[in-house]
Image (cartoon, rainbow over the protein chains, first blue to last red):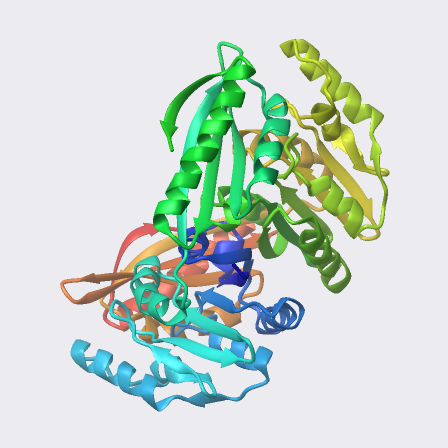
Length: 266
Length: 266
């Protein structure tokens, strides 16, 4: 399977400063992985147009990912600058998008609001963008094609972002469907450092596999380590079978090292 | 006040894929802001040595921040590569750090473990690094000076990272103490787009201030918007006074627009 590489951008000083925990990045990282994308990085930046556009330009030229998803910064306030940032990074003009304007007018009319200057701002998009309908909030999203990269801009409010993601998923889904299966179990009594060579050996024996240990502390001085396994494959059945097989091998090794197993979910 | 700029790096495929929500980045973003740092970005990258070191090098040369804090990737397993990544980005050799080795030996002895190859790995650090004691887990952290930038590497397990942060804070705290005060309230009945020009006006009238609106949805078709204010200043009293003053001005304007106020915490 060839790699479909993706990056996630969050624009929002409140996220960078930790006023808000970035659950959007986790949501998108997870959904993109399930769709078969290799997410290489998730980046949160302050609401600074120059800094953010320079950064986006760097990711575009240096990594040329198939997909970039941005969240945040589509609203009417002074610090909502994502579409300006994208336009700047792509050297495209920011223009009034008629389709987005129609979406906006319809949404405002249904709520009895006027089309003020601050609201019209939400319909300005990089030239050539396709607006994405927002069934929950006011600001439409945007989808922009640029060379090999598709850029999808979604709002920062999680309810809005998640609703709109369903629409986006249908557009970006590849021609070959990819399935991800997961499993995990907890090992008690073997230190993480002793598990390390085992995990490495199994990891290297399988492709399209991800194995990770998470130390969970100690119980009566016994180290407790969670082991997580995920596999991507072109069939759901084969992905699940492979997870079972890998978990089986790992459990065997952990038991050999004197560990006991619990919370087995493979 | 001159800007002390900082970036936060998280190394971990599990974070990028959304298996784990990045609460470490939020913790650090918050604490660094409270210490008077301007956090410009928080970046999570997959456990890929080449990709991560190239990225770190870019941030160092392009932004020259005063501080970079990394979390994750200090443990004994095959994908714990942070110190290699930092060494590579700084073009420094990765060497056995004797002080770190002593910390490690002591920790292992207290738990009755041997010093295996996988465990010794945790004492290899970029040349010139100072190890940071880990009172909770096994892997020491590292502090590296490079030109104008200090790089602090902490583990990914939140309990360990947070404990070690207290030690780091004493080292990176500036000579002039900086205080941050915060306030927030909820406006009901005024749409976010109508609040936008008000927030902008007040924001522009004050320096060292951050004002942000968060739409919270609707109640009986009335828009509910949370407004957050923070101020940094060289005195705690003046920071708090300024938050009160700004909140007061904002409330006045919201009421003029026909809104009502609740959950006032300024």
